[in-house]
Amino acid sequence: MSEQPRRPRKPGKPYRRPQKDPVRILAFEALRAVDERDAYANLVLPPLLRKAREAGDFDARDAALATELVYGTLRRQGTYDAIIADCVDRPLREVDPPVLDVLSLGVHQLLGTRIPSHAAVSASVELARVVLGDGRAKFVNAVLRKVARDDLDGWLERVAPPYDEDPEDHLAVVHSHPRWVVSALWDSLGGGRTGIEELLAADNERPEVTLVARPGRATREELLGEEAAVPGRWSPYAVRLSEGGEPGAVEAVREGRAGVQDEGSQLVALALANAPLDGPDRCWLDGCAGPGGKAALLGALAAERGAFLLASEKQPHRAGLVARALDGNPGPYQVIAADGTRPAWRPGSFDRVLVDVPCTGLGALRRRPEARWRRRPEDLDGFAPLQRGLLRSALEAVRVGGVVAYATCSPHLAETRAVVADVLKQHPDTDLVDARPLLPDVPALGEGPDLQLWPHLHGTDAMYLALIRRTA
Image (cartoon, rainbow, N blue to C red):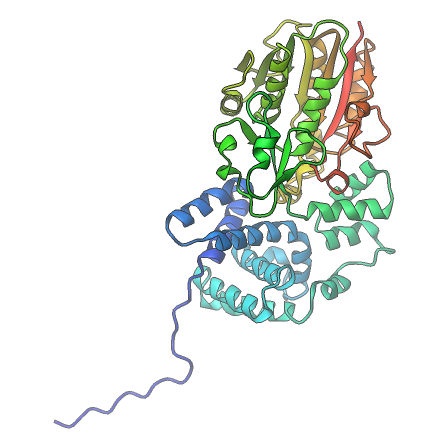
């Protein structure tokens, strides 16, 4: 039998399976969760990393790269969107969100990391082949090759309007913040180009992990014995972990004797605890206690004086977090699930009261970069009645001669001074206490009597604090 002639091969490259890259696939999954489920990266990423480590797919370097890809992409999303928009032939809203996520990851590797350009493009195209398919991978390849033609500074000159023509839009594109947030932060700072640029740049820096040694349970010296630990800047209980430090590896954190807490949050609790009182100092209230960081520090400080702390949180699951944070507190305390605007306690029951009210979170954009894209100006109207209601309830809860601390993790004037001014108009039986002398080692706290912390000045979240004494 004669041999059958072989069928000639079709021209073109043979099919090749896409190469799966666990690091970039995980980063893509995290970005999709943030986009599709309105999840927060700081909640989504840790379980994904833990699962990858348990499966043996990740080492410490892989985890660090995945973290940088996710947070770096989210922080610079506005800048990257402007660059991608200049490289595609359609409005960005017409680009499928999964494709846009792959493109953003690729642009971050090209413009925001030291990954070589050819490797950044190649890895992004392989990711696209795995999660999107060959057809859309070609689109990703074409766009990223355009992006790779210039560096970040060159692209910013091209896509950002000149500062002199539109300063707010220039800063919004260059520093990757929505225009309305730029405007609000600028108002809070009081003007001046240097201050606003430094603040916006600080929002895009990776924040340090800060621990708190809870008094009576752990000491700062104990925490400083950990690898990569250095003292905090302002709080006597703060310890910072340098890059790569893992809180879960610290024994005191695992045992609940220490916790992860931004230094600005610690300073708010310390200012309230240090505020002078007229009369006894036996009963303290944390009226918005979830998730429990400030309550745990306040509880420990109260215990040193023999005072009782009541920690109240409206949401039962968050009240559970508060109870966990306070478990083992050396002094008396109680945790309840209650609405601070409908008090479960008698008026005038407390000597010191803290209300760290729900807010837009514009002071913590370093930690939750996606919040800047999720929040809208109209959100301020939604928070306003609650913030005022909680402050009014706090003033009713404190006794004459006692002190209320109104705190918020937002520097927006509508959530800070406007709230305090409006409520105090209805309470002529109160005085503002100058909070600045209570933190004598901390500079640049503002004109007073309230105080404002800033990422670019203090290395903390942008916490606001007003102290109010009940006079009659």
